[in-house]
Amino acid sequence: MTIETARPDNYFDNIGAKKPHVKSKVNSDACDLSPQRTLHCQCGRILMEFGGRYRLDAPRVAVWAGLNDTAMLKAAIPGCHRIDWVGAEALELEIKVNLGVVHPVFKGDLVLTDIVPAASYTLTGKGRGGLLGFAEGAADIILSDDGDGTELTFVATGGASGQIMRLGKAVIGSSAQKIIDGFFKRFADAMGVSITVLPPQA
Image (tube, rainbow, N blue to C red; front, side):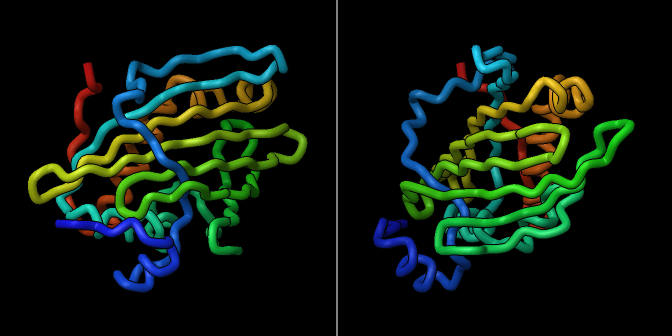
C-alpha cells in the first residue's frame, strides 16, 4: 500500500477522516523505550519518560483515522468530559482526574505540528489544574505496517508541579505506564479491533 504524504487537509478529505490532532516527524530508531524514568529539572518540575509498543489488528490508514476521531479519543481517555477541534491543528479538552482526596478538572490545549499522514506525529499538550499547578507533556506516535495490522510506537515525556505529583503520585507516578496501556486498549475497543502489547525494543 502506498500512502501519499500530501498536505494534511487534502489527505484527510481523500480518506474521509477527521482532521489530525497530532504532530511530528519521528525517527523510530532513536526512540528510547526503556522502562519509565523519573527526572527532576532545575525549574522544580518533575518529569517522567515512558513509552510502549502495540500491535493493532487494523490497517495503518484506519488507525490513523481513529487517532484523529474525537469520539474515539474521548472514549479512550478516562474522565474526559470534552475534546473538540478548535483549529486545523489544535484541540481543547477537559478531563476530571481522580487524585485521591481531590478530583480536579483539568482544561488543556493540544497542538499539532510536522504531521506525516498515516506515518507519524508529535502531540504537545499543556493544561492548568487551577491551584494544583501545571501539567504538560509531549508524545511521539509512529505507525508502521505489521502484516495486515499496524505497529504503534508511543514515546512520551510528561511533567507536573510538585504539588500535583504529591497529590497524585499513585496515578501520575508509578502507574503512568498502566494509564498509557489502558488508553490504547480502550482506543482499540472504540475502533472495534484487537490489540497486543509488545515488549520493549532491545
